[in-house]
Amino acid sequence: MKYSDLYEEELRIVCESVDLSDLRDKSILITGCSGLIGSSIVDSLIYANRFQNMGITIYLAALTKEEIEKRFAPFLNEQYLHYIYYNALKTLDFSFKADYIIHAASNAHPAAYAKEPVETLLANVTGIKELLDYARSAGSSRVLYISSSEVYGQKANSDQPYCEGDYGYVDFLNPRACYPSGKRASETLCACYTAEYHVDTVMVRPGHIYGPTMTPFDSRAAAQFAREAAAGKNILMKSVGTQLRSYCYGADCASAILTVLLKGASAEAYNISNRDSIVSIRQLAEAYAAYAGCRVEFEDASVQEQQSFNMMDNSSLTSEKLEALGWKANFSMEEGVRRTIALLRQQAE
Image (cartoon, rainbow, N blue to C red; front, side, top):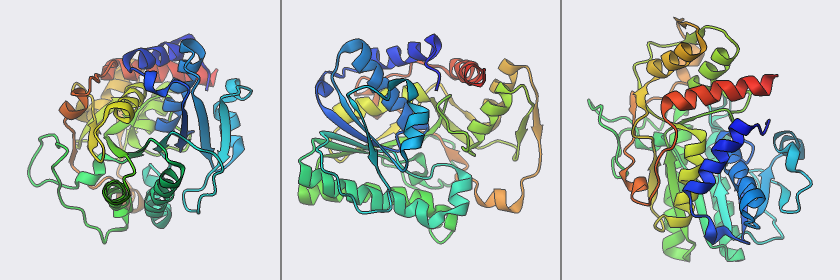
């Protein structure tokens, strides 16, 4: 990642929009720290240490040190950053105490769901179970679990956004349900640990997050649109794109997660959605095309591609519960699209 003035500007906005004082001189463990969402959170905390003297100790949990070195190269010598080997499918053996834990590790894009449905489900359920046990023994202050809008399932004949208490149908015998089923079970497990063992947990349900921190192998539609637009190519869609989504820029997602971590009610779940960015997949593609000066083209999806598609025609979310904590989105869809393309192009230079 190139920490340009444009990118550091949005990190400043994140840190100024969330009261991070409760994290001062605390420690935080983040799994999935090099991914789309996790890396945005880490970058925000690094910025807080650099410019707000927060003194936050950050444990970067990942499979390999190489992915940490590649993603956070400018800060590897900082005393507050620590690489921790982490496999969401394995038993934990940590010798340190983290005051706060964020579980962001999971397969999170369609190609991975199709190839590894077993690992996708278990990385969520096994991963959070191990972290909850660790938090219980270590006396951690709070565990935040990053869930998904896919937990809601399919609502019949409705284009209204989901509130946190709305639940629809999931065909749990479809292997594609590995993702929403894993997320549902993991949320229940968090609530159970709070009720039985008094481990303080909280959950977030991001909508469709996009931005320049996506990984190169991210196969989600929004990531493909961004890469194609940034490269000056026409955007290729594999459906008519009428599915309704809640899109939220990565920096806004990071500020939302930090807000819930510090202010959310125990064992509660919070949608992450920009109320002004509820649009169809096609509308997002057209926004990228309009800014980049390219076209949107259509092609039939293969059978294999269709099997990996999100099963929800409508996954739009309400944001009132999150906003009641004092959060608001800082980046419109147009601004998020502009920044994504600009930052991807900077990284390619």
